[in-house]
Amino acid sequence: MFYRKSAAKIKAVAAKNRLVTLFLVLGVVIAAALLTYFIRVQTGGIRVTHRFDNGDVYSGYWRYGVPYGAGFLATASGRLYDGVWDKDGRLTHGLMVTKDYSYSGAFDDYMPQGFGECRYNDGNVYYGHFAAGRSQGLGRMEYADGTIDFGHWDKGRIHYPEGQNYHTGNLVYGMDVSNHQKRIEWDSLTLYADANGIVTGKLRSSPYLQPVLFVLIKSSEGTDFTAHTFERNFAEAKRCGIVRGAYHFLRLSDIDGQIRNFIDNTPLQPGDLPPVLDMELDNSVMAREKDKAIAYAHKWLEAMERHYGVRPMLYTYDSYYNNYLKGEGFEDYDFFIARYSEDNMPRVPHLEIWQFSEKGNLQGINAPTDLDIFMGDYADFKKYVSENCIRRPSPGSNGGRPGR
Image (cartoon, rainbow, N blue to C red; front, side, top):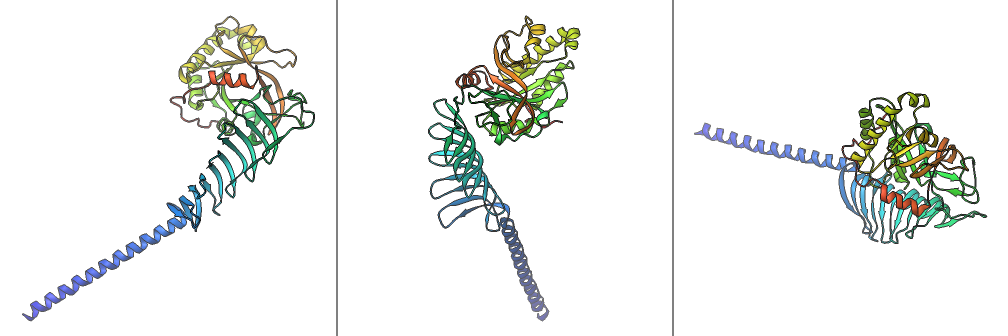
């Protein structure tokens, strides 16, 4: 009997000890989990929702007592922010929505500061620089009535230089770029004009300014070359509100490979210009291979129309058109023609864009740049883009991976 009671007592003590051990282990696990959670919250590893004393509510990552990384802030005054906070808890860039406008771009102390885009409820859109929440410095305003302003702003008002004798938008200038331009400072792009708004590309400075309103960007060449600057330039043009397009330089190599090269690396989006075929093979090559070049051009153009859903555009020289392309079935295409003569515009059918200089000087680019002009005013340009632009995201694209 004594031994049975002792055995039972030992078992009871052992069970109690196991229970205590279990609680201790559970306590350690819970404490470790809570500590891990606290550390991850404090170091920006877990999303949290935090209500401030002033009524603002923040949802996002948190680090050492302040917002950090991607997050969303709703203020008690009704403003909404969706952006990125730095290590000191300061909003650096993102989107702000108020009752009067929405803004996307750079911030300082929760106010627009630096370069950004502001869309006002009255239909006006501003692309340019801000300071303390107001347009300040170089910028472009597109008004709801279809007019446009460009120049230097001070506390929300544009200032025209003395003697300016033109309205922005009477002439529509653009450019085309490739790897040759290297790194472009898109925030400061400016064309220098004379007092009548005429751009020749020869001026290196002027108080009279014109905006770059469209850009054609080299994407590919032949079967395997892709411009390493394309991805950045394509994204930056969109950020700055510049109508963008892309072109392919034709070579006499596998045309199916050339078609794949452009499509795989050129994710044209709604609102972009139609794809452009750059056709300027050497005259000596065209003398021997004209029929092959024309057949390749037709196949590329037809493939682009099927893929992107819009009719492409052809780029070449006016003499090249007259010597090789006239009467070869290209009459239904719009043309982008190079002719470097200020007094004589190209004489080809369906001329939409004239490249008038190959040595243009621009603020924001430290290399000679091809300069272009659209054959119409800003209202005509907007109408052309509306009627001919890409209307749906390009199918089967890989997102425009960078090439060499």
